[in-house]
Figure 1 (cartoon, rainbow, N blue to C red):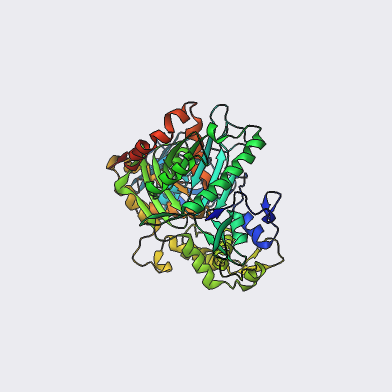
Figure 2 (cartoon, rainbow, N blue to C red):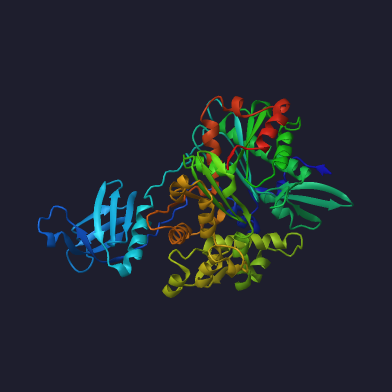
Length: 553
C-alpha cells in the first residue's frame, strides 16, 4: 500500500483545514485552547435555625444559643435575626474543614481548615442529614484546586529533547517537551483517509484533514488503532502514516521554537490508556525506533498515573469519562489492580444517541454536505459531539430537582453558517442522566458511575479508603460536563457514612491532564531520557518488564 508523506495541501489554509462548515466544526472540536475551562462550582446551599455551643458561657441554660445559619460560597454564616441578611454575626470558611457528625446528640463539629475553625452546632433531627451533606459539600471543595497550569509561550526544555506522544482511544496529542508545562502542539482525531482507484490504495490525509478527504468519492476513513475490552487492533500502515504527520508537526514546532529537529537527537515518551494492550504499544515503539523515523530512544507510561501527576499527587482515584468509563485507584503510584474497572461499556456515545433521537439534524447535515456514505456517520457523530459540548450538562442537585426548576430552550449555532438549532432545555440534562442511571440508556444491569467509584474504593486496602474518597480525579472529554463534579460528590456522599467527606477534583485543564502529567515526569530530571527511555537493543527486555507492571493487589 503506497503512502504519501505530506497531507493534502488543498485541504489546508494557514495551518487549518479549509473554511468549509465541516472544517470549522472539526477545528472547533480539536482546538487547543490555552484559556482555562471556566466553571463556577455550585455548592449545596441551605439555611435555617440551629443552636451554637458557647463554651465561655457560665449560665448552663445559655450554653446553647439558637441562631439562624446559612451556607454561602464556601462559608458558614450565622445571624442574630430570624433570616439571613447582609450582616452576619460571624462566619467561617468551610474549605478544608473536617465535619464530624454525632447522631447521639445531633451535633456537627466543624474543625480545622484555612481559618482553623472550631465550631459545634446542634441540628434539628429532621434536617440533620441534609445539613451534614451541605456542610460536606463546602468543606470538601477547594476554592483553588491544586493542579499543574500550562504556561504560554512554550519555551523548549533547556536540556531534554523529548517528544511527548499521547495515544488515546479516539485522538492523538503530541508536542516537544518545554521548560514549563505546556499544552499539546498537535491534537487530532485518530483517523486516516484512504483513497482507492483502480485497485490502488493510497493514504492521502490524516487527523482533521482526513475527515474532509473522507467526504470525497472513493475515499474511506481508517482508524489506525481500535481499542476494545477484548483486544487492541493496530493498522500498521495507517499508524505509520499518522506518525509521519506527527513528525511534520514536530518539525514545524521546532522551527517556531528556534531549535533543530533531528529525530536521532530526540527521545519519545509515549503514554497509553490503562486498557491498551502492551503488544500494540510495543509495535508503535518499534516503528519510532525504526530507521524510517530513527528516534534516539523511547519510553512508555500509562495515562492514569499521569493524570495524578498533573495534580502533583501520587494517590487518588482516576475516573475517565469519555466514549466509555474507566476507574483506576492508585496508591503511592501503585495501581490497585483488584479495584480497577476498565472499559465500562457506556459513556459519550449514549449521550449522543439520546440527542440523536430528540433532535432533527437534517438541515445541519445538509449544510455540512455529508452525503458521502463513507463519511456521513463520522460527520453526524462530530455534529452530535459539538451539541453535547454546547448544550448538555448534569443536574448537579439531582434530576428531579432540575426538572422542577424548569429549563429554558437553548439555541446553538453551527460554525461558519447562518444555521441555528433550538434544543429543548430538558434534553440538555436528561441526555447525560444515564451516567448515574444507566437504565435510561437501556443498560439496566449496570451500576451508575457513583456506585462504580464507591465499589472500586471499597475494594482497596481498608486503611486507604478514607483518603481515596477525598481524592477522586476526573479526566476525559465528558468530564467537562457542567455540574458533573457536584453531582458525583453528592451521589457518592449518600453511599458513605456521614463522617467520611467526599471530594471530586476537576482541573480546568483536565482535557489534557495526562499530557501535562507526562511533562511533569519528563522535565523533572535532566537524566530522564537516559534512565527512563531505551534504544532498540534494550527494547525487548523493557517491554517484558512493562507487560508485568508493578501493582498493588
